[in-house]
Length: 74
Image (cartoon, rainbow, N blue to C red):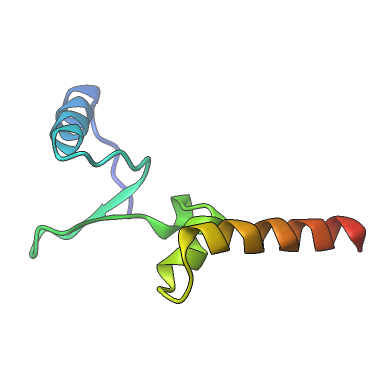
């Protein structure tokens, strides 16, 4: 269940994340381990493809472009 933060608390969290060079628009914070990860729902297709560890970010961009062109041609 989502909870709404007040603006002061939200600004404090943004400030803390900014100091850690975390600039994701949406994050998941594991309060047990202290891990901060980007929410996959906020990632673009290149990020998701690169996340699979099988291809580079550059190849993911090329692949996404190829898919987009194929969709437009179809």
